[in-house]
Image (cartoon, rainbow over the protein chains, first blue to last red):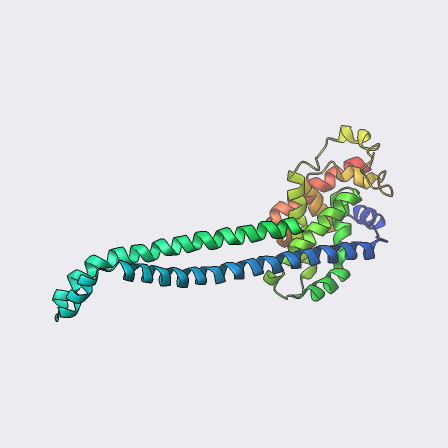
Length: 130
Length: 159
């Protein structure tokens, strides 16, 4: 497609120039700084949540394990020691694994809730401070 | 691309980018400024997707073009009939230096796609293939937009 000479000249004649280039770049740099700050803040929050999830996992397992151990009837512990074959041991263990896992999961959720609550309070304080 | 690298490259291209947007906005400097800023922020956020192939300007134009269309969808610009042009000459929003330029007024009668095609072709000197890459329309569609745009402009400018 050929370029229409008249139109081309018309367009070139009105091609705008800008005497506020520094101002434009200054505003852009300011906005980019804000973007960088936002990205850094987002990454920090993400990192905090990852640490929190690891803490929840460890804490939940630990507390859940302790709770299960305390709930484990002593008579069963003794009876487990008296069992010598896997076929004797497995049904007893399987029947008791459910409650143990349940306690661990429950504790994980409790810890997650607590940590989530603390994080939200901290974030609200942070927002108010700003 | 680091922030400093991005800024340095934008410094070289900003005048062309702003001229392109100012023409698309028919001389409205305020809107052109805002769209240029938004486009550059978007470009910075997606700068990891930019592959170094010497087409930085075209890449920026593509983002600016899409940002312009998005802004327009927010009802900020409208295409008008030729008969309504007279009323525009009193608008406060148009840039003082260019408000009465016949070309800007004539450009207002074009659809955004026709306006973009005509601006990229005549003001920026891009080929049809390059315009097709920027606007993601087919080359045939660009030819039609150019042809229609040119006819409308000629009709208006020859008055």
